[in-house]
Figure: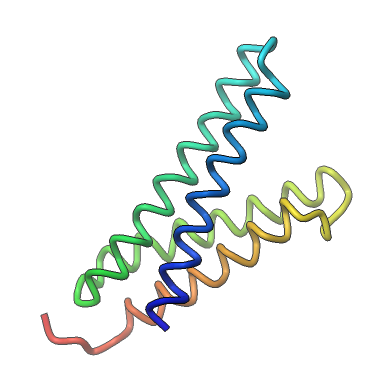
Length: 117
């Protein structure tokens, strides 16, 4: 399961690169929108990094809870995005929702595990 956990983290990181490039292309001439879009890219990278760090630190329950909270927030944002574009089956919304819920599940499992410190 650690491998799947890591894959989900890396996919979220790679998705951030796609988001960053897509945002640059879409909002390159609108600096205010580009700034906020790239902030979302940064948030995705940070959440991916938290999750990848958590995989390697199974005894760090605090990190797991922070990761869990971040993943739940990411899942809520994925649903909000799908609703905004009026297409919950849009690949961008759906893949982010799947990754966020998967990582939230792995984070919760780590947070409630009884691994000795």
